[in-house]
Image 1: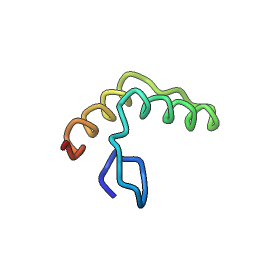
Image 2: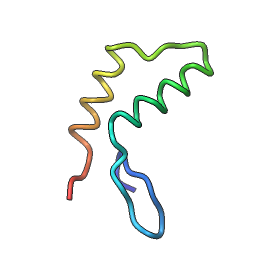
Image 3: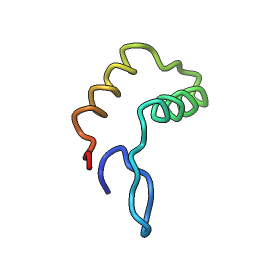
Image 4: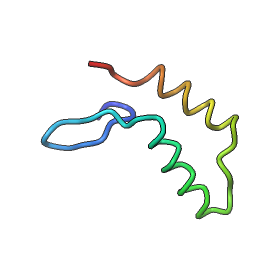
Length: 54
């Protein structure tokens, strides 16, 4: 499964960065944490450098 992808047997789609942020914010909120700019920058860097583009 490629990094930052979503799907299954029908194939995979790119998981866009804004969706990554929304999911991270929701997960962190359940843990009483806040997604800050540093963490967003890390996610953006990883997204930009690991996503397989077609």
